[in-house]
Length: 412
Ligand code: GCU
Image (tube, rainbow, N blue to C red; front, side, top):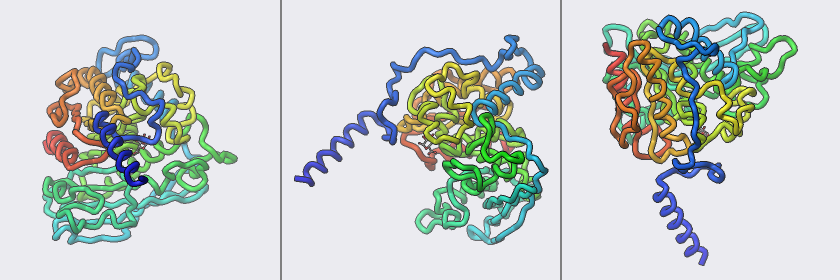
């Protein structure tokens, strides 16, 4: 009896799932997955200043509008990085070096980045793979990652040749002339931090302060900051070309990726893999995850962001403006058909509405205004996009497109 019920439940579950062609999430009740229920919305215009003046040239964008938008994202969404009360000393140490990784094709480095001021210390561990056969410093993919560098994720897989155990196609990257850097999310900040006493934040607290202010950085802000500090390290490594770094990340790390690339113009290219709500997806569509749902992680965004729970229309920005901040540098947005929690259409719309800023700066926006069919990547512009069939992951198909897009821009 129990068995029959179970079989029946599984069968119904499968039918339900395939009918909706979407992955189930923990917050599936009270979530809109119906395109016809997306409300009417008006997006804020990246090319109109806060004072209402039209931005008509690159200089106005750079000197007036870009700083305004950056400040809005910092103060209302991800939080500002405060000036520390005492300068932070940053140092690097090679923990391990393996010059014959991947059949001698690559060098693998374990690097510790250490931070210190009178408020305390913190450290993060990054992994760096460098192609051995290079004539000049190599461009590289910097992955903002969930994988702990101290575990087995960065060993070679036994079952998938040329791949790391975490699924990264290392041999493809190395054979295409790229280095690969993995930046761990969990050293300087907890995944769902609620106290802020242990990681990087304490080095930034004013005397007497023990918690970020409402407009100051939380978790994603610290993740983005970690990526920027890893880039500082790369600038000291003469076998990597720090001017040709593609920063990338999936999901929560895709959100951190876009915020890092928006703030730090040293990143040459940015790739968002299914970053969804708080990443590439438009807030105002309220499709899949929303501000309220995202804020169930109370400090991924800054405290000010909570004021926009169920009030997305009041936001002074939307996420197409985050992509605009990356202009004129190339940006790629990847979605999955079944990854509806991340709102693939909202991710595409963001990429589309960043177009006018790219065009103003003489760059090539998306070549279409309609979301492409699954597995028809848009690779030719400075904004790239694909909708892959399938769910929430970084699949081999995604990697292929990321490498093709990077080849168009970082190999010139
Ligand atoms: C949750 C969260 C998403 C996030 C995802 C992930 O689903 O709601 O915003 O992107 O976790 O990081 O995998």
